[in-house]
Image 1 (cartoon, rainbow, N blue to C red):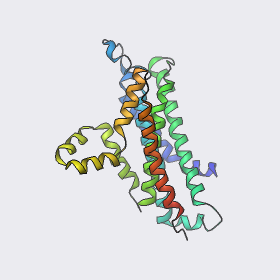
Image 2: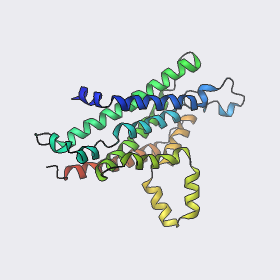
Image 3: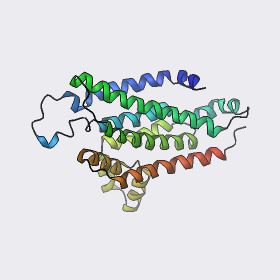
Image 4: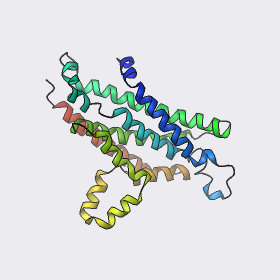
Length: 237
């Protein structure tokens, strides 16, 4: 089963590779020759790369899980899959776990290969892998829910939710134009960028923000539980 799923994902894995290639050229730590200001030494070191690893892991989950439930229902594959005594929860959980594993493997490979290409050797940064693990869980939870809840367009919605990661000015603009209550509700629904940023800063300062880690895991779990309940009670025949 895993071999079949991997074969189906081969073009998506290639897209993840292309995303990683673009992020490599955008990662400042891999393209600096000398750190003039010690204040930025951590950001331009192995731990600083964890922010880009998080971008890669989040985008990888969106790419790998795009339509992973909704496409099956829309194209009629779900009825074929589950006409046999196969559990939808087990089937889609396997696909989710496989996507998560690929996203983390991509992040690890990016960290190791990027260091050898840019710096000529490994300099560590393994603790920074916590950030892509958390980010993959966030967007994995979002994609699971959206793919169950929406008939199509789940990846585009998730990508829109991802955009404030690169353009935080969007949230600043919304804060000035939306009613306070609506803005707070929007922040609750959006991925926990503030908590992830706190984790990143904690990694740089070697003082991990465990409260933020727990919050991110709780956010991810909430979407996964919601998706699980919808799958559990959905009619597949």
